[in-house]
Image (cartoon, rainbow, N blue to C red; front, side):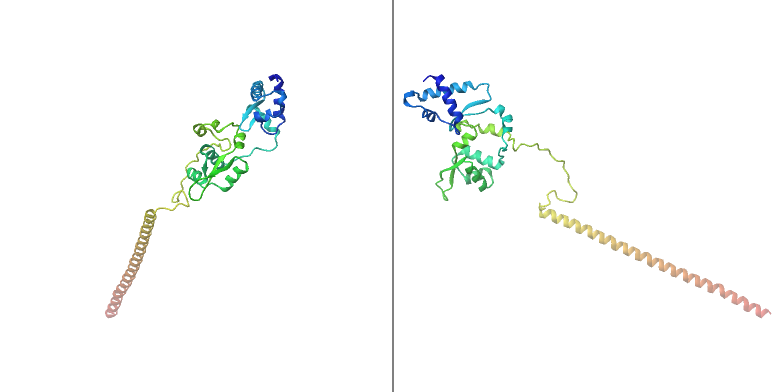
Length: 273
């Protein structure tokens, strides 16, 4: 069979199939009398891929085989046809998946050691339900932890033919995840006097002692000043009382002295009479 006769059949088979098809699966469509080999099917696929240049769809080879798919350039418009919104995954899930993809086979304790946090059971369950990871064995150490690796469904979802097509880790570090991307605007510093910046943070013992000493010293000074003030007020009151008593004594003495000469003069006047 000529390539030009073979192309429409292969194209129709790929469009009718619900899953990607391999060269072997496409070869099963033909009988022995058709005299179609895998080499001819591969040439037909190459020609079909070339025909997609400049179109909105492309013929892509992934891990499970060949499939027609929408080009990334027109995906933002085509995605409006689908009412179901794409799933959004947390950074913890994506980091766990990346470690499994790049360092497989890997155990859960090894992932936790690298990330520095405990891997949630829900994350592993979600990855297994999506059929992105699977248990490929068990580590020969105490406890026999399971070894995780990626699946063919993982490669299909991320449009990869093999793990060799994964981008280098250096490129991933420079990439920004659109789901996690946000602009970090530093907030102005705002420090309240006599209050710690972190209310839950405990102050060092030395600082607490110093603060207590300063508070005790300040209280003692205030007590001393108050005592001195009371003593000064009492002294002033005593001086005022003494001065008042002195004035009363002087007034009484003056009155007596003033009365005495008057009596002497009166007696003298009687004698002369």
